[in-house]
Length: 223
Image (cartoon, rainbow, N blue to C red; front, side, top):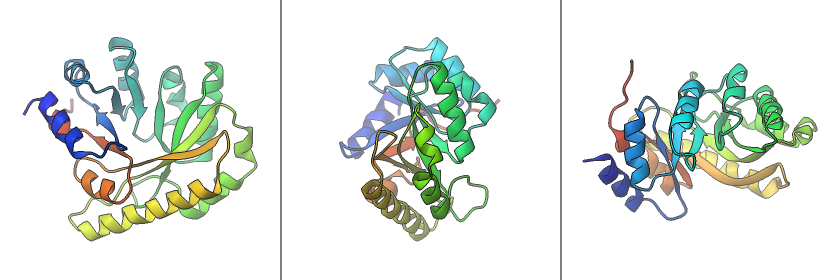
C-alpha cells in the first residue's frame, strides 16, 4: 500500500482522542510530503540534526516531535521550533530545555519518560524519581517548559502479557499524577505509549498518543 493508504488505514483504526505521530526518522522529504499531502501534520524524529534540516525544508505548519534520546548540548538546535519533546529523562535535561526555550521566548511542551521496560537499555525516570521531580522546589523555577504528560516504551518482546502489564502500570501512574499535580507548568493530558508493533495494545490500555513509523512509511532506511 502507499503511504496515504497506510495512513488512512491506521487513522481509521484509532479512536478520535488518540493523536498519531508519524515517525519519519531516516525518511526522505518526499515521503514526509506524501504523508503531509494525505493530511498528516505531526511527525516524529529521533535525531535533532535531521529534524532541524527537515524543519528548514518542509512546510512550516508541520508539528515536529522529538521522540528519541536527547543530548543536552543539542537542545539549542531544536529550541526555536520543536512542538513536543517526548524523552525528558532527567532534571538536568529539563533545565536545559527551559534555558534554550527562554532564549526564543517560548514555552516548550515536554513529556517525562518513564522506565517501564524490563530492558536496561531504555532511558527514563522510575516512580520515586518522578515524584521527587514533580514535588520538588526546583521545577517551580522553570518558566519556559510545560510538562504535559508521560511517555513510556514497553519491553521489545513477543510476550503480550508483559506489554499489557507495562502499559497498564504506566496508565495507573499517569492517572495518579494527573489527579495530584496541576498548575501552569504541569498539565497532564498526554500519555504517549505504543509504536508500530504494539500501538493497538497501548490504545486499549489508555494511550492517547501513538508513535508509528514503519507501518506508515515501510522499513527504516539507514545510511
